[in-house]
Image: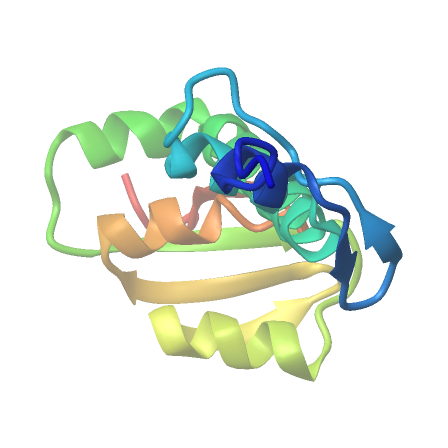
Length: 150
């Protein structure tokens, strides 16, 4: 009997059974023994990995948009005052709609709130980093210096 037909190549070419999809023919990488390339292609084709990659890309794009457009919500007077390097400033925060409990609580975390008139909240003793943090929220329309500031 000739034993040349039995060997590792024959075993690699046999049809294997996948856990969910029935018979599968093993994929051969262009470079034999390159298990990393084979793993990368399998991971990239998995629906869960694709979903998380898309969700991460959308979240990164959204946060990047807010980070880039945030400074445009500050008025020129406020930018000049922040450039002077004060420890705290007093600001008027105008939202795109009348602030509700969630928005008021967030504003109270970054400064001392002294009332709301319409959709404008008065915030006192707010630090410059917190002003920059506030301007990155999508619901903020404009941030200006309070009238009692220079």
